[in-house]
Amino acid sequence: MILGIETSCDDTCAAVVTPDGEILSNVVASQGLLHERYGGVVPEIASRRHLELVDAVTADALERADTSLDDVRSVAVTRGPGLIGALLVGVSSAKALAAARGLPLTPVNHLHGHVVASTLGENPIEPPLLCLVASGGHTFVARVDDPADHTVLGQTLDDAAGEAFDKGARILGLEYPGGPVIDRLAKEGDPEAFDFPRSLPGDGLDFSFSGLKTALLYRVRDLGEDEAERRRADLAASYQRAIVDVLETRARQAIEQYGVSRFAIGGGVAANSEWRARAQELDAELWVPPMALCTDNAAMIAGASRFQQPMPYPDYLSLDASARPAA
Amino acid sequence: MKAILSHRRVSRKPPTVESRLVRHETGTPEETEAVGAELARRLDRGDLVLVTGELGSGKTTFVRGAARALGVTDPVTSPTFTIGQVYGGGALEVAHIDLYRLRSLSGEDPALLDDYLTPERIGFVEWPEIAAPELGRPAARVTIEHLGGDRRAIEIE
Image (tube, each protein chain N blue to C red):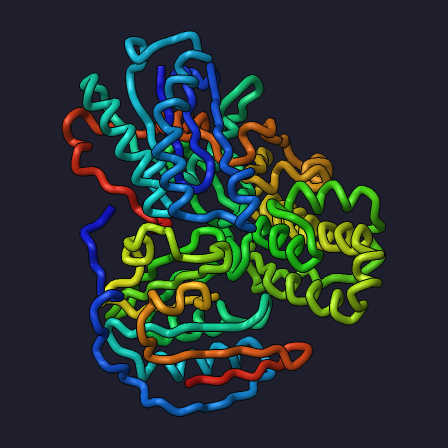
């Protein structure tokens, strides 16, 4: 049994996963409500809340898996990238738990957790595969030949797709987090009402969403406050369509260029209903995560640790969190 | 939490960029990057640059140009979600902070920004308004304004 802990951003997560990739529990204590008041993630509040929640969330994950620390054979934890203060809570907690039992510890790259989430659950897919991860902080397409590693084929040059949703929602006067709100509102709007740019920078598979955000800002200004409010659903639908078009184009190009026929989507944007539906049209064996594996979670961290060499006790006692992407 | 590097609470060394206001107008993101690069060449270890402007005005574009001139080769992306990003690659590390998601620093752990802004790095802070007193005296203040389309006015103080 592997115990996973993830505290890289605003959710405190713990999970129990078997060596075969079966998810026995996957607990997420969301700080979303707390952050809604502040219009976003508030780092120190995040760290303090992680500290208050991490023990209870871990105990809950063990209980829901109908197991105890006695059956845990290794501990996995997100080392980075993320907010340093938040990461340190998870890393310290995991180190303490593992050390108390003399268990090995595996530090995991948060992004790799998203990439190999598709090897978990009831209908896993195996590498070689391509994966498009789009979240609030990251947007990239990667190739996985061996589940221990991934190669980034293209990534955002400015804003992440999830950030485009959040900031777009802010421009439209909607609440945080913007993704679910725009998704809901877009269902009532005309996705072709407004023509927003689809930026596909360079010759490779990179992304850019910064110009789209500015285009929305200018359009809202041109319309004026009343008209922008009246046509909010159309604006949301057209804006979402532009984001999803770009994701789909890059996915299609990746499949054509690399000739890999298995494709997984991941990250918080994989919870978007239009993107989930559109991904079904890709010419590939598709893996779409269940909602619980889209957003940050510890099951994907425990899952990814299965493909890495764990650090034996006490080698990890000096392990530090790393905010850098190359964690 | 790291050892306290409370350089913000002790007096900073005098800014290396002279105090005067320079206004640029740019017509493309590349030109905005070039203005950032030009400023970067006058910065030194421990310097802090505050970058102010509305959503979509080109703050990250400006910082990208500066970071490139300082030897950073990694993609310089918006740190809104991650709050802070540290880039290596050049002679000095570059810290890129975005306080957009914060409403106030009061009540926060004082070491929050010390994890990122150190006397050894060159720091850029987007949406610095809420932290202005805590940040100390910057080497430069940059204000970017929309002039419509891709055109921007950039004031450097």
